[in-house]
Image (cartoon, rainbow, N blue to C red; front, side):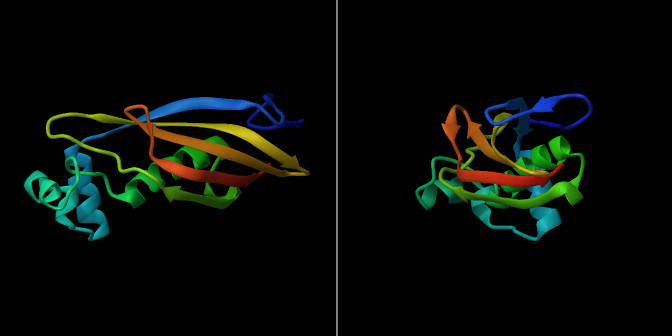
Amino acid sequence: MVHFGGARMIEVGTVLDEHVFYIDRAMLKAYADASGDQNPIHQNEEFALSVGLPNVIAHGMLTMALVGKYVTDWAGGAVAVKEFSARFVKPVIVPADQKVDLTVSATVSEIDGDRISITLSATSAGIKVLGMAKAVVIK
């Protein structure tokens, strides 16, 4: 058991507070412009459907960035994050004129000295979008 984030005690099995990010087409456009990834599957519904997708989908790296923000916010900054990884298992589907959730939570899976390992959960519309998601932070 360790103190983390003020007086809060953290131990293996501690469930971290859930956070919900909302993604809409405007965010996808802003991310495409910032990242240079203008792939039409992220902005053009007709094109996305033509290649077998159910609708426009969020950029995978946008999903990772939001989950990474969850980790860095909890850890107290990026400098405390030593590892962060995940696999993409399902896309975040973003219909026109809607905001969709990216719901992120985590559980402390291991504590080794000042290293805290967390297992992350990321879902959208109740569907798991990242697999094997984990991070290691330093207390």
